Length: 265
View 1 (cartoon, rainbow, N blue to C red):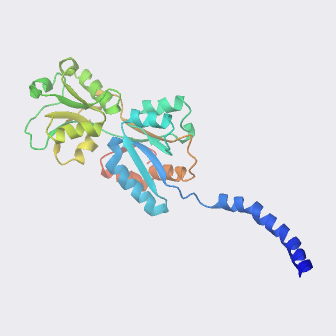
View 2 (view 1 turned 90 degrees about the vertical axis):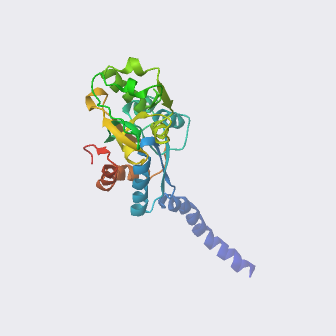
View 3 (view 1 turned 60 degrees about the vertical axis):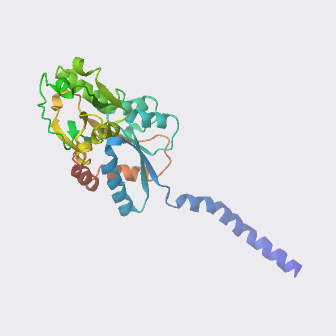
């Protein structure tokens, strides 16, 4: 029996060697099943949750999002947080990562636009016309105006709009600053401030506030949401999600939440 076993062993060794060599190739051929992770501006939350659910339903690839102010999530990516895509609420923070070679420049797309709105609690009856010299400071009384911090795109857009309308000097010391636009929305929704400045898409998903008026687009820089793949991502499904985000199905969802889709959609 010993000679037979030796013969069989010698015959099987080449076969085992081929199997061992091919195993890594087979493993590499398997589809990437890791969830795709998106770091996205907090103002996108409601729409993005639905878009990611639609992507997962269509592709059977899980997708998840981490939301926050654009500067906060950009810095998390800079510090090595495991993101596959980044969606900023303005081009500046995308540029910040681009200068550090932390995104793939060829993947960058201008995805969405938005409007800037003055809001009040839903039960409030205040009426203010958004125009040059608007009487917002007087309407505040002794209270404060909720806006996002100056680092956050919504905060910068709000300051630019108030400056263009000539009322920034009267309001600059009467602000309730929030870490991001959704936190500013919360101040007004809870009745902690009588007015706030947020995106109109935020106001439309919060029943406890109402839109007093929209700021003219000419009073602030264009509101743009760029998206790009993070350079450190090794998830092969990142490009599939990027293609979905810029496609018609996602575009219809974004428009339902009152975002304006840009020409790619």
